[in-house]
Image (tube, rainbow, N blue to C red; front, side):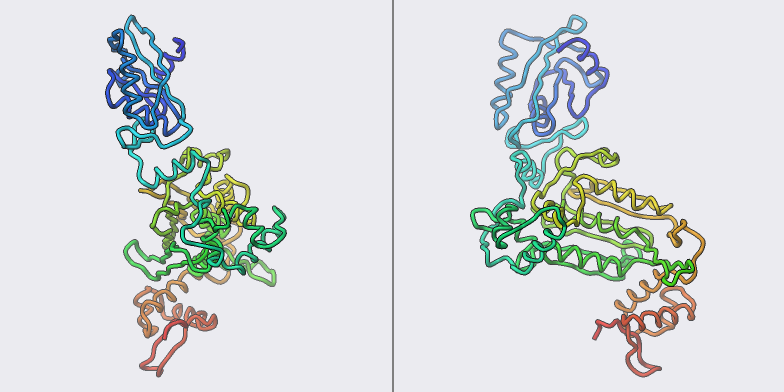
Length: 454
């Protein structure tokens, strides 16, 4: 290693690809394994964690013994590149490894990856993803266990084929079996995991759990959606829309302008990201929480491959796809656009909402996305001004309350929601006109029920 590059490494300090050690030991082997499981990296032995040169004593067999220990304690065996140099008259040993092509690599039956400037133990799901990704495979491309063609729904497949052909992105000809084979949804005549998720006769064991919350601990409504992925997306989107506030703007035209609490295209993009990119080896549900001024989406599975939060914040990140067949299916039907452009489109959509924030983070073993706002947008020109009519958020709150408290009367609603009687009566008329509620019983003893209540 030339002296200029070495000085740059010392100045920049420890990082995702650089580590300093004063001596050789098991921590060196662990770090080399973590480097090999991530992006590769360099360890400088004879440097303390402050970047100060301490030097290391090297005997005739020292380097060979160290290399043998690295080989014997890593599986598959790592053989690092070795360089010996002098800095200020002191000897420094440099071990370097690349991004290992077949992963994961273990150190004494434990698996590590490099995150920032430290080593992290890999979870079971991270191990599986790392292995599949290194083979350029994905879980959804494997044969589904104990399944055959009878487990697929021909009508769902044909609907998918029709949508693909209409989209113009690809043309599927021949029988539906030919189409599935062409798209790799059949392997040796057996449906893949992706085929079962998209076209199965029975609903797969994965839920989208959605709740309407007044506070983090107060649930107004709660629903679980389970179906093949195309079905689950549409059902979930309809439910989310039913709980959104809507401002009505009248601009002099015959038809009023409806302004949803959040841009629907952004919500759909976030929902699709959760479904397409979730870790299907995890039993955890996709969880969506709708609050008065925020909505959150959580899906199991951290960012895939080398994608990071920092890269997502830019507009030139490259797509990293955990479920290649599922992503391809939603792309061919035009449910998703060009790979790697989802967050760019979300930012474009919310740019018309002046106080809206778009936040995201890795959270536990999953990924959390949040849209929130300080003030609801109620006109096409911005947050305030030019509105006749009202916002329907209170109507949805009233409907949620009736669903959870069937048989209550108008006076109960005024107390629970803190609204004047005239407002409650107007909302009740609106919900009755929409067919959402009915009054049952005598006028003095009866009460309101949601239409689906018995």
